Image (cartoon, rainbow over all chains, first blue to last red; front, side, top):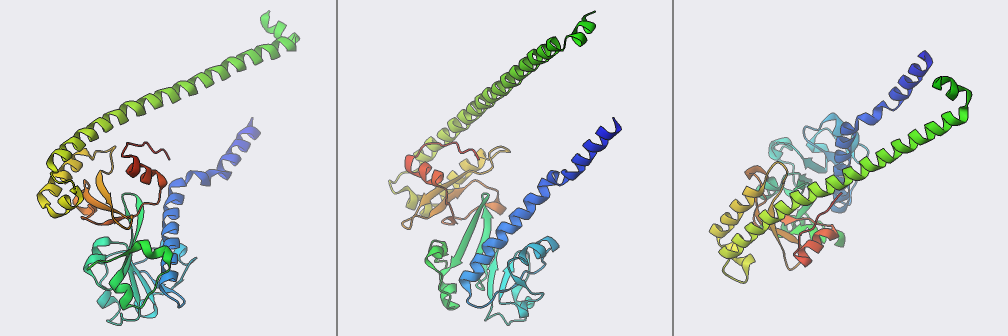
Length: 154
Length: 150
C-alpha cells in the first residue's frame, strides 16, 4: 500500500508543472507580442535592431532577449517600444532623430509625432498601425504585406 | 455462501465484472450525451435572447438613420453617432464583452462607426480594426448572425 501511495505521489509531482497553465498562458501572450514586434522592427529597419523597452519587466526581458539584442537605455538603442508611461524627450535626451519609436497605445500614437506606429490589443484582437507621413519622414519603405496596416493619420 | 461461489468460480466473477463495467460505461456515455444536449439547449436559449435584443436595437438604429449613405451620416452627425453608441453601451454585460458597429472602407479595411465599450477602451470613429478571420468576412457578406466556437 505504501508503495502505491509513493508511486501516485511521484507521478503527481512529475506532472505538476501542467497545472501552472495560467503562468504559461501569460508568457505565451508576451511571446506572441515579442514575435510581432520583432517582425515589425525587422520590416522597419535595415540595421541590426537594438531594442529598448522603458521599465521592462523581468519576464519581458527573458522573452524579448530571444528575439532582440536588448539595451538598457534609449541612447544605445535604435528601436524603442514604449509600453508604459514614459516621456520620450527626457528619456532620450532629445537625441531621437535616428531612432524608431513604437507604442502599444493608440491614443499615444495620435498625440505624439515621434511614434511611427503602434501595436495594441483591441477587442481581444491584435492591431497594428503605421502612420504614413511618419514612415516617409523616417524614409521607411515597408513591404506589401504591411500595406494594409498603413494609415493616413493627420 | 455467495462469496464462496464467486471465489470458487472465477468465470462468474469475470462475467459479473464485465456486466457491471458495461452498465457503468453505458451510464457514462448517457451522461456525456445528456450534458452535450443540455449545453446545446442553454446556448440556443441564451443566443436566441441576445439575437432578439440585438435585432430590437438594429430596428431602432434603422429608424434614426435617414440617409441611404448611413456611413457618412453617422460620421458627420455627432448626435446620431452618440445615440447609436448609447444603444450599444446598453448591450454590454458581464457575458457580452463587446458591442460595436463597423463598416468596410474602399480598401477593404474594417473601421469603427460606434463602440459600446467604456471610455478608456472605446475605439474612436474611423479607427481601423484588424480582422483576418474569414468568419468575420462571412458575417459582413451574409449580414446574418453567426456563432463562432473556438
